[in-house]
Amino acid sequence: METIKKEGMAKKTFWGAFLFYFLIAFEFFYMASPFAVYFYSIYRPALDFFNASPALAWLISFFMPHAVIETSSVFINLHNIVGGILAVLGFLGFCIGAFQIYYYKLAKKGAVTGGIYNFIRHPQYACFIICSFGLLILWPRYIVLIMYITMLFVYYLLAKAEEKECEAKFGEAYRVYKQKTHMFIPFQLPFSFRIPVMPKSKGAKLSAVLGLYVMTLTLGVFIAKGINSLAINSLYSIYDNHSATLSISKNDPKQLEKIIQIALSSEEVRKKVENKRYSGAKYLNYVLPSEWYVAEIPMNGRDQSEASANRIFRNESSRRIGHWVPSDYNKDYYKIIFTKAEIRGGREVSGKDILLNVYRREPLIEVWVDINKNKIIKIMEMPEEIMYDNIPVAIY
Image 1 (cartoon, one colour):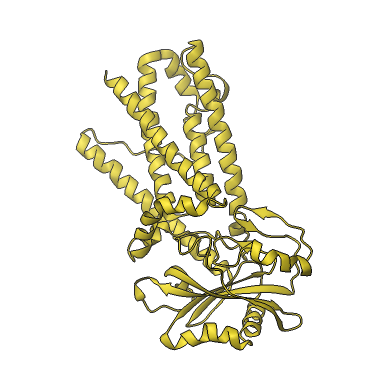
Image 2: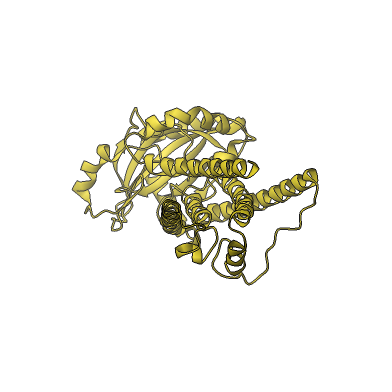
């Protein structure tokens, strides 16, 4: 009876974690669809709750770029490609393992030891860990990292419990299989990693596991914050006491300054932007090629600007989820989106700290410029409806 209870708990925990990461993948892909706003409206209250709290807001923030396409770091630039590959490979491996399990059950062949199980004892857990890591890289919120680390501990403990059940059920045959097969990876690591010997009493054992869990969480968050620091320092950007201006594509500071100067040469733009400075307003501005569209930035959609773009540019395009980023774009034409940044808790911040403390963004105006001719192409008022209007998505 106790074995049956443990098996039931293991399955519920596994599928609970599977559902959590399915929702992460669902958010990642669904946010690019026309129904994204409706999807976000379902759990926006929870996001708003975290976002409004100076103590908790970091949990839903991103530690790697999602809106920004190009940075000066090769490591950061590759994270979406690596994440996508791992997510797909892990999911395929998970499906293969599931097929084998149900085939063996239906055929009543006993313990699954062939196929992918010939290389590792827990391929489903291992593949789901790989898939989940890929999703974490694709959707790098701190709260997803915390759930990922939690999942690692849960799966290890579940795997150990299942092995005890298999030994009791299949006897010596499973023990022999266990001795010749690795647990999660099909090879011996160059270093020996072992969970410390646990105390015998349940209370001491629980305390030891919780202590190790907290240490791992702390290390994971520390590493993520280091990656976040690298990402921010790799952005093509300029800062001052009042504003942070980010380039979504590769750009140098002098050119960013030039784009701002051209845009502010218009009295209409200055009235929209500079008149707010007297109140100590902070700004988060985005620069990107005029052909590009990035859903996370409060800007005019492709339906508002594409007709004008097609009259000026060649429209040879590549797509990303929620992004329109042509690889062959005219480097003389850019647009800058000025937004007023509401700082969380009303804190006094400047420069890079603006990025880390943005609570809401108020889109002010969108300006297209020709940097070769030093002139404004056009000025666009912001639309009444913004795709992710102040929904806590990636800031950069």
